[in-house]
Length: 202
Length: 117
Image (cartoon, rainbow over all chains, first blue to last red; front, side, top):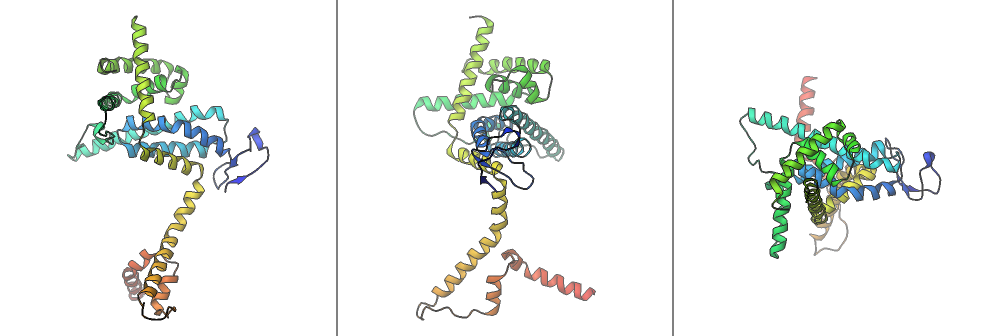
């Protein structure tokens, strides 16, 4: 259970905050991890939502990633958490994607296709009656989500990690589990595809 | 503007739009993310809640039944009355309510096993 300690833990961990020790979980500075996760959760959710086109699936993926980071890597150095979390998140997204493809093939074999292939239709409609500008911004966000979702997964991941997360090529390669050359190729193709769809709108 | 500059400018606009979308997450999603974070940091609390939920719900329901029984006799002095034995067993049992819902099944199973034995 959580307990407030005033000790220096092994490995140089600060114990100024709450520590968490439960069966199967190594102790770590939960306050620091809480701050880290609070800082990344929104972008992580948006990445997962863009990939899956589904809010609930995205929340599940983020939950899994957070759990795994805390459970397996909570004791690692704080500066490692970012890279580790991205690696876990991208793996989860890729796992979801593979399962989704298998599911689609099975359903297609049984003659039951997806009723609606438009991922945007699954996103919550956040439009509210309001100024014309707000409506236009919402349309733009929908267009952006659709364009990103339409990218092959690897291009999508490479683009979001490089352009949005700000990772360099090596970090992106590590998060995706691919070579640096692959990252450059995927990123370049992603930018080209997105510009083709969005240049006039953004 | 060079080709490279145009690309950089485009990517920058996409990043801005993505940042904006993150800032505008609906309250429901923000709450769900916060809950997910707390579950990840304190899984022991989630496990405790899961273990205590069923008995707690059973106790809550039993309490509500008891109150309803007491209040149903408004013309009588407010004093606890003796409940039939089966009611007391139900209220104090450690079994979940689902167990009692499936009681017929378990009785049938017991009878079947007795016949087989």
